[in-house]
Length: 195
Image (cartoon, rainbow, N blue to C red; front, side):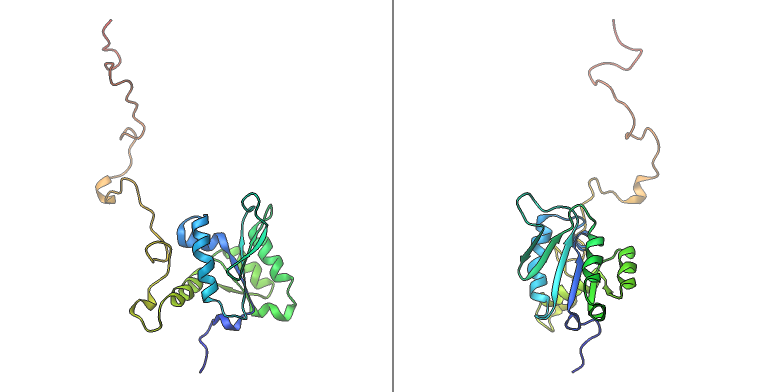
């Protein structure tokens, strides 16, 4: 049986731009997003695939820069950018093995740097589709539904405070309330004060 194109079993190393992926799914990076991601990656990855999630910045105080959780390597970039660390990890591999290495990101600049180093790239949608398929029984009606945090959508919509139909709002005009000063409600308008 022929394996599908972009099968993760064809790869030896998968480097994930962690902040980029978590922003695509959740709109931000936080502990809940990381806790959601790592066990799903562990269930999805083939045994032969090494997965490294690279995050920008420093870890929480007292935590190491590199750690393993659920068989997935989690690495913080520290003072450097996650992009630089990803390109360095890819470049440290023997040239012939780079073609069996892929970077998951939406970042166009990082994708170009990876291709220049002879690595492959994958989109966040590719990975999220794989994670979603790994969570559901094969052939189930929900097997094609996208995966996400919370409600199961690829991106959890953020609630908009004061969401109003855009047509009913009209265009912004100065003095519509956003910039109008109202003053003390217990005092009369200027020029009408009693003395």
